[in-house]
Image (cartoon, rainbow, N blue to C red; front, side, top):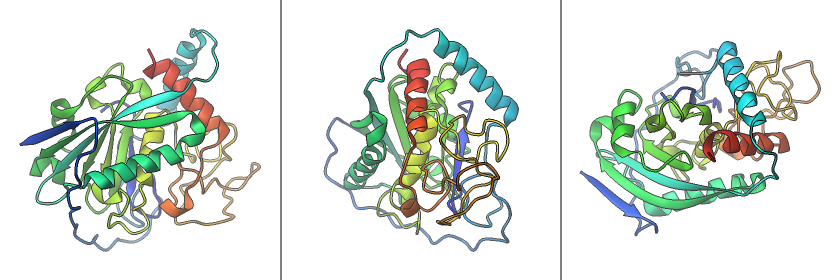
Length: 300
């Protein structure tokens, strides 16, 4: 998400530990992080990046990839028996990766879980704590992107219905990334979301520290594209009730309208790149898509 700032990188093709199942244990003190470096000149953002950062989104699905994903989705969904919307329970495995910093408290993880449950309350999706695993590994913590496969191979728990929620230091530009439900079949070990540990509630990333990086990334994990997917043309994010948007929003630009079609830009949608405080909603169409994606790829 370019919420004027730090990236939300979407994965299309998935690309000394302590384990504490069930209840969140006594909180550990949250670690401080260094202040972000100064950004360079502004440029159009294709990812959730700090304004002006020279970072592009890894694994962002292009038109051909989206077309292939949607063809597979429609084919599989069409073969499923028709049924009413069901309640979805997602089991959350917090994977806290830390070095000299980053061992976020159990209290902070509980707040993040509360943020997810509040955001998805209208979607028929609830999140329950399954386990917290703490892994001290300085290399994984400081560069989870480079070490993603090794980290996830060693740590990932559960099946397609288990959300592995990794926290680490993603640097001065990245906020997080996620895999799509359709990726699970071919690469289950890579399934999950990775977020900057300081984007959790109470973190030090100003404007991005209310936990909605997690909300946004889990949206991808549930099958949603960005609201600006496809810009002003085509089928965009494949959801009819999210107005078309030419590019990611930055900050909270009320009244922004970048496409000639009906409706102002959905800057308050969790799948845009606005500030955490600006993002407040999923649409009914997004809720339905998440239900359908779950039935197609995760409930099997």
